[in-house]
Length: 110
Image 1 (cartoon, rainbow, N blue to C red):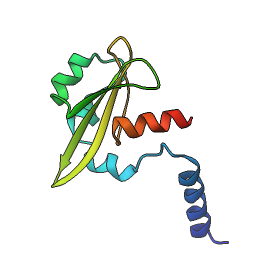
Image 2: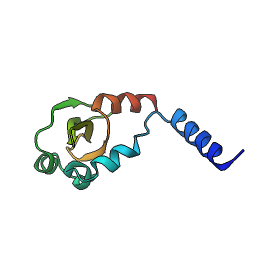
Image 3: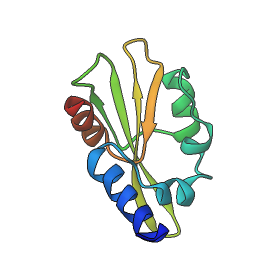
C-alpha cells in the first residue's frame, strides 16, 4: 500500500471511531471569532457574555450539572454552531463547533 492509501485509511478509522471529533476546517475558518479565540476554560459566564454577547439559547446540561450556551458564528456568509458549556459554578468547562444538544448527546455516548 502506498502512503496516501494508508493516510486515508487511518483518517477513516479515527473519524469512524470517534463521534465527538470536530471538523478542523471549522477551526481554521472561525479561528478569529472572539468566542473561539478568547474564551478559555475557567472563565466566568459573565466574562463569556462580555466576549460573545447573549447566546442564541441557553440549555441545562443533562449529563453534568451546569448550563450550556448555543452561539451561531458567522464568517463570510457561512454559519456555524458553537457551544460554550459551564459547570455548576458558572465556569467554562468546554467549548466547540457543535450545538449544546449535540455535545450532550456525544457525552452520553462516552
